[in-house]
Length: 333
Ligand code: ATP
Ligand code: MG
Image 1 (tube, helix red, strand yellow):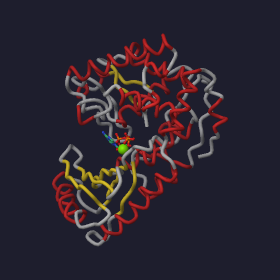
Image 2 (cartoon, rainbow, N blue to C red):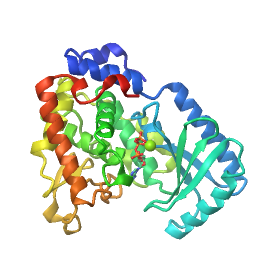
Image 3 (cartoon, rainbow, N blue to C red):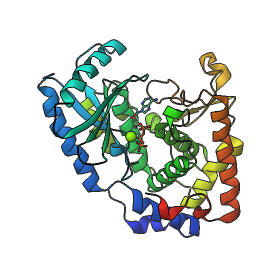
């Protein structure tokens, strides 16, 4: 990436910010991690083509968005010419399950029947985990939207990595347990950065509509995101101030009961104007398909825990001005 550690130092002149840079440098995905995932993807695509000759396999998620950690899984989207229905995806995944179990470099293959059904498996002999979906191509589009946001300002990647580590430590970063997915957290953080005055980020979809057109050809998407220029923000807040501001915003400013988080619009939308959103505890609009990405949070006590963690963490960090008071830094990878 084009940034140098020196550029980041401009935003890291206080203790918390310096701790954030340190955590980012220790945990961020390395080029060697990316190469390993890409090599696996290429081999698997070849093997899947023996079953489906037109199959294309895309890496998505944090592996590609710039938000990856060394410990992140690799998300894969298999693109096939099929009608996009649940039954078809399940049929394909069942056939793939059998194929993958014959491959020497693949281990522990499971079919998970979630809203978006996936195959989950590992690379043989390592801890590298994969989640593969069929034709959920919105993941390719939104991954490159996130990537463009991480390129828009040098502070985004370290800030988002710390937010993810903080949320994981608080046990509020697991959609399968009724809390926030990493993707939901990323959209919440981006929306805060769009709303803070002066803004750290614009709406890239509004400013560069042709780069993020919802029907842009899949193979054009990565190139599209590279042509988005970086944003010159007037906001010069340090990393630590942005993290504290993020916690404070969701602890006390944001109205969970009446606002929808919209990264697409760079603002929040009123829930009462959109009846289908009214009953949701947390409303986070998917930037392309406009469904609620936070639908996993449907239990009142999980919702309360999430709000409590924001409030409690804001209070602690504001008082102690030390990231160690929130996260045991020495043990986090
Ligand atoms: P981690 O490093 O924790 O794996 P991640 O950035 O890969 O984080 P995930 O929540 O695992 O985030 O999601 C992976 C990708 O799947 C996202 O980048 C996004 O492209 C897609 N995705 C996840 N949830 C949704 C959703 N509700 N709607 C649309 N796309 C989604
Ligand atoms: Mg992932």
